[in-house]
Amino acid sequence: MPLLFLIITFIVRLRNPFSTKKYQTRLINKVILIYRSNPEIVIHDYFNYVLSFLFQNLGSIKKVGIVFYECPGLSPLKIMCSSISIYLQIEHTLFRPGSETSSSGIQGVLPVPGSTQKYLIRIAELDKLSSADVVFDYSRINLLNIQSSPILKDYLKKTFCIRPALYPLHTSSKGRNGVITLFGNPNISRRKLFLDDLRRHSISSENIRGVYFGVENIYRKVKIVINIRQTDGHETLEELRVLPALRSGAIVVCESAPYVEKTAYSKFVIWGSLSELPSLISEVQNNFEEIHARIFGDGSENSSFVRRMRRIEKCNQLAAERAVNRINSQR
Image 1: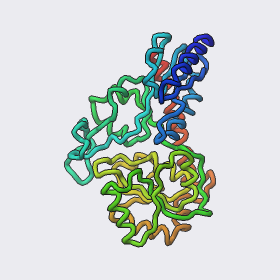
Image 2 (image 1 turned 30 degrees about the vertical axis):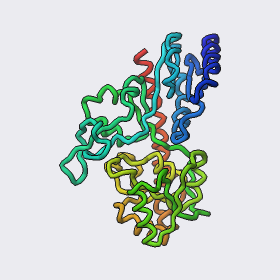
Image 3 (image 1 turned 120 degrees about the vertical axis):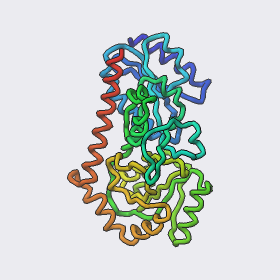
Image 4 (image 1 turned 180 degrees about the vertical axis):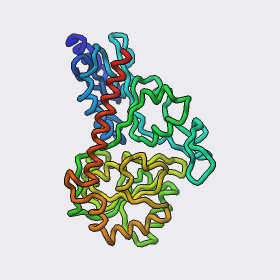
């Protein structure tokens, strides 16, 4: 095994200068893990969070082999040893019929609230993910939607939810200032109209864009993080933003989204329709300390918020263990 590891490491290092995607290797018991050392910046923190679970759990795999984590470009190495592929699914799957991307969706059975329609299921890069041995998804709402389709039952069996509990808990209200949004493109009509509405209500906010590293340092300094959906058709909650902001102690004021109770932390978020958000933000600004204490408690391990966050962390660990158990059962 050490010799095989050295050979594969040499091949990977030989390849790296000729590709924008850089790879790295690690030997974990009987497994050679190959993973991106420069993951896509928009998912950098989540990528590394899942990677930490792989470091912890791959040692439980019983047979010698290679594990490819987000490494589609290294498939020729599979001839050297038995292998498994692990990918992330980090896109929305919950789409309203009639939206601009709904034509590529699979009909699901989850009802659209207040409508006779059923949500569509749209999985980006489905062919790639279908070829994987394990898929990690950030959202229990996504999995609920996928679960509704018999066509995707095999895909569901290998998909596990690791929610983005990315940063250490920091629940203090001290030293916080400001209201932020995190729109990559604030000029998209829906977002622009919303920002115009905030100004009409005399709410001062700052849009943070282009920051992909150290985002938790921003969350820990602000009072309020506003979250609205990208389009009318994208309806999966943006948990990759909401949960990390919450864990950093910011109050999250969020546009209402379907099935948020499945997150298991929805009671700690302030919800409202797009038109209601300005007044909700004003209320939080005027009563910040009181509302912050109501959401986060005293920050002790006995507070409701901290207990729920610890439970989510534990569920993530169990999901990683179940993924490894599935790998062992199939090899």
